[in-house]
Image 1 (cartoon, rainbow, N blue to C red):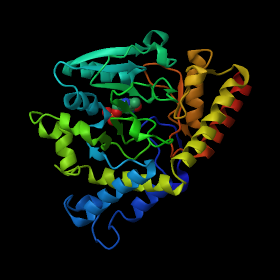
Image 2: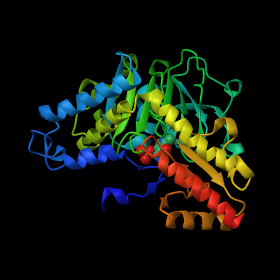
Image 3: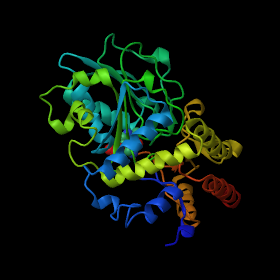
Image 4: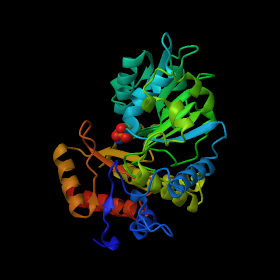
Length: 363
Ligand code: PMP
């Protein structure tokens, strides 16, 4: 298929990648310039690959202004492995970890952490179907908790934190899988952030972990080496063979974000894109946003129609019109437009146009 035949891909992840990134990768696939081999065919210990890895890390550091006392790691196992690995490293015996439960992915993080140690659920919006986020005064925090964990963007429910929860001196840990680098992030406020790459950063199979150096001292030598942050940090993510191709694409993607003008510029684009869809949702009442207005995600726009029958029609007709992946997560139903950084604004305009037409025909 030629690149001009690309359709509008609203998938929640793996998700659309930036076309310039795909084109550069395509051009350099048989041979990296001057190397004569594909990035997939070279040793992860070669100068070429180490150069690619170091450049990706430098670009990430520059993009988000990450302080020198934070390590940037490229791991495997997805965000789901971090649900276990992070408490295995940071939650010592006898300690308590606070978790804020704001969606299915927070719930999974809690489930895994409970297998490692003691968890205090500091707040949960589950009974309200995760449509909103807890207010600061609703958090029951543990003094001197090992860390406090939350999910910055709830991919399935379509909610996103705008201000960080205040957890005092306790290290703040965040699953940033579905909104990493979609807006400025002040890493100095966090102890650790982790994100599966397959939404805003690149292909699946790479997990970006950014950890404050002092927390590495908590990683016990008794941990399996592959599950030990300190081991990965000491080996610059090259303890074993990493996902070399994934890291290459992630590096290109971060450079592409920088070329757009950085995180503030990307945030402005994301505001505008999401704003167009929310304005359409709110226009007449034919569509109903599922997230409370003040918690609406700029990455995953979730909405419903008056009946499941209408929703089925919406999905079938939008797919036929070249708008792919608008069906909501199977656990919640409805519709979800995932519009990460690389999702083009023209696709948002096409969706708004389709929504108007659909309402005209069926409203
Ligand atoms: N956390 C969030 C917020 C997610 O959206 C996802 C994936 N959709 C995960 C965790 C799980 O990620 P992975 O598949 O990389 O394990």
